[in-house]
Length: 140
Length: 40
Image (cartoon, rainbow over all chains, first blue to last red):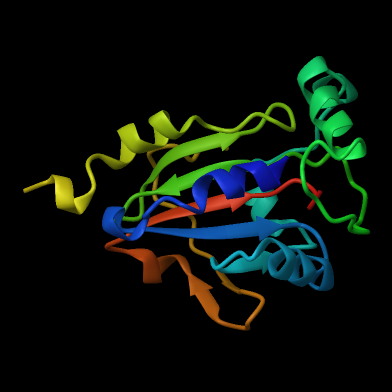
């Protein structure tokens, strides 16, 4: 379900907002490379199999009850029955590792740490835009 | 460790293309770190 998050963000003009997006994955580099090629991602991707960055920002492993809920099951059923396009990809199969989002301002200060509580838990775009403020072309 | 509203811990990593990513290089821009779960 991370893929939906990326697909949602890709069409947005982040340059006018002076935002650089970097994707971090705990998967091995070969899988991350395949994922990038298949999904057509233009942003930098980091393979962090030691999960040093995950630990640094408190992205923890889920408890079973966090991933066994209706919204998560619905997402996985969509995967299984092809309700959305995806490519099967062998990975480390660590379904308990949770993701998240960290937003660092231009002064190097962290303005948002969103530690996902379930697979589909991501910050709303409105929340991100509220933190970023108006885009450059809107500031005149 | 609550890092919210605190300086981002410095780190230096290489992306898939072996470009170095340093937190300091993003001063003057917003940096959005998007931590994935698995790649499905």
